Image 1 (tube, helix red, strand yellow):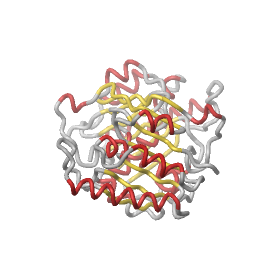
Image 2: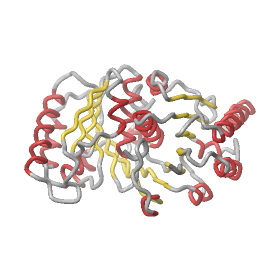
Image 3: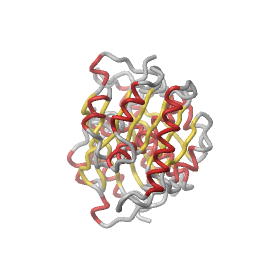
Length: 170
Length: 170
């Protein structure tokens, strides 16, 4: 079975949750899933549930604090370490589905380049399915991907002053 | 905490998986989740994983066979039973998050009406968060919802003749 590259981008809600849903579906069919979360370091509620599910490995490669500023050296280092780890995993046979959560944002902040990522994707084991999420997907990654969904924000309660709620947004 | 109504619609991939991801996030924070899947009766891989997670209840209200034809009496009956069950759950305090998967499609096929659904949503316990998925959301449900994301298909490998794969699409 050939693996494809799926991209979930856009400003709307549902990108990371869609990738988590894909992980759940995949393990339900006996596939092994690796989730690498770039930029993020915050304890999202899903970490709690996902770490209890056998067949899913999840790692974070960020500190989750630069998002409104410039990334620090430490942010870049964390993402770099993550990128190197992902590289190894993509040429191994350890996982069937690999999720690169917020990789688009990592590229946007120049933590690694889209050319580097595409090179790594090209050299991966051909059966591996890759899911890439995050706003601001570059045109190169869209061209390279087999499937692209844009999550378009039609309406959002944030605009009415609702804060992130535990278990719903974080 | 006031609960909101979230809608995930559009032709792109990621609507049901986003709702599953939300379920996973919610149980990670100790919330209780009910997933009612309209139209569907097929054994999707996610059922396997989700039924093993404590805090999530999942039920199907469909036969999954009419989607390219007209719904039969049995399809309508199944959806009706589901709708009545959902109605009860929405006025109880048993769950914090209620997912109505493919409810938009159920409305599109006239298994129940959007007016009925909105009436039930209005009378629900105010703390309950409701997630509604499916293509073809009506303008009434979009107006009523607090958050709406359109999953827009930018590129899809289906168009290249790829069949649904176990653990990825089903």
